[in-house]
Length: 427
Image: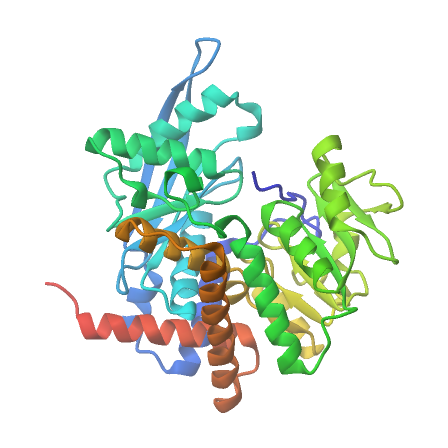
């Protein structure tokens, strides 16, 4: 399951992620000269479903959990997006994440719209059987709007391939036959794709490598700090290490560790599996998650929650390059501060798009019942991510856009707007 940090470096109220998503949209829409009607349409979610999920607990009690599924936009294809289990899940957060998914799919050129789902629950306090019952009930409740041609869920924070397997089985039992294409990120044994587990981290790595080429920097020897040592952060750290970069700090929900001489992320992962945390890794000093963000490194990889870099700490960020492996880790106010300070940001809707891209590959393989080897998956991912990076920097350079985030949003919004105009409004 994805392990993330929940503390806010600023110690203040987190910014509403939907407000962030709308501010980013408006900045790009202004530069595109988008009309007021189209703006309203592209900001508005197509569907927002709120469900109650009663679950019989192991001790016989009945608990009722609130769940959400939001479909933001369907102009370019069926909705696509993860399911997260977390106590802080809100409708606004899920709507923001669905919005970002729309732009993410459009940026890399895959034929999906954005969706997201979530359940308000601390899943770490549930037994495996309780987790299964919650998952199956949630699947039934949102079953009225999901389907392999309508809306395809995937893993996200505190969900994993096993949870996707339960979702697939539940949906299939109601259909009366196996429907592997209903979810992605599931085990390979039941229609999952090779390379999916590493896909988001691999996309981060590809994007950073392309940025190094664009900026004339060398990945070899680059110092890297990774906030969040879950599936994405830990694999990204290992990939940076294997590529010759020096990972000097990593963190999880319990704290962070730092070593100027470098930390071997493969060894840290073994320690984390045994000890339950990266904290206490031999030869590294403990630091806070807030301190990790402010380290003097070449590349900072936020791979945790939203609103980690904001106006209260942006002026202390010393990384030269920020690669957003998480969704919405940087607020619009922080964006401006960082841009003025010359810090290059690789935006989330590009940087972490490797996961949804290989989810698309998985869905294609499920629908065709024909599966690819891992080299083919990775090769296709490399091609799409590299092309998306080049498309964004080309737009940024030709239109004199001040930063990659705005350029990425312009590219995505333009593609979705064009699809919307071509299809028209029915009736």
